[in-house]
Amino acid sequence: MDPLARNNVTDRGQTSGRAIVFAHGFGCDQHMWRLVAPAFEDRYRTVTYDHVGFGGSDLSAFDPQRHGSLQGYADDLIEIVDALDLDETVFVGHSVAAMIGVRAAVTEPTVLQALALVCPSPRYIDDEGYAGGFSEDEVHELLETLDSNYLGWSRSMAPVIMGNEDRPELGQELTNSFCRTDPSIAEAFARVTFLSDSRADLAEVEAPSLVLQTTNDAIAPEEVGRYVAGRLPNSSFVRLDATGHCPNLSAPAETTAAIEAFLATLP
Image (cartoon, rainbow, N blue to C red; front, side):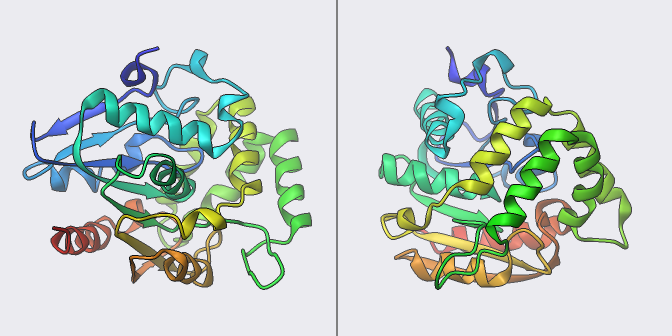
């Protein structure tokens, strides 16, 4: 299957030179980058896409085996980069997509030249010596609720994830995005997201990396972001003034400026 059609790839900006690939998080689609990606089109080739099962992707391409782990989504990303023959590719991944980018960088070290990870988490469940933000019971309860009442879960959780109570329209946008997703695919992707453990991958990433962290992130607390930055061999950490888990929507200018500053450090 053509990866560009499969993942509903949008290719804009310059036709040569450095490319930036933007990847969305759980329950969303590439529309979530509409306030950030256009700022780079005058100087870079910009690519946005939908993970299989979300947005305008080909739902028939969803394979429970392939997409039963982050590796399948990383393979999709690698195929997109190869199909477009991108040069000097910078990957910008939000939430779970951050670890999809990390997995791709480990799988094919030459495919991504740099990574900007927005509110990343390599493991959501607490472990000995590691605070992921959730107990194992809490994650399984979340997944059970999502499985039994996805729409209800979406309406209650989206505003919490967005984390900007004074701007309810943002929570409503995330709710609407969640509710457009096929519940069975969303439930499968949620299991991949919340039960994965990518901690061992971090040390294997050779590319320079940026970790962007917000305040009051209910999904990936600051301690997690600092953990990620501390385990990546060549990383920098930036704490944004933005609140909540989706600064690409709630604080696009600040998010854009931080990515711009990171790009300026690359050779």
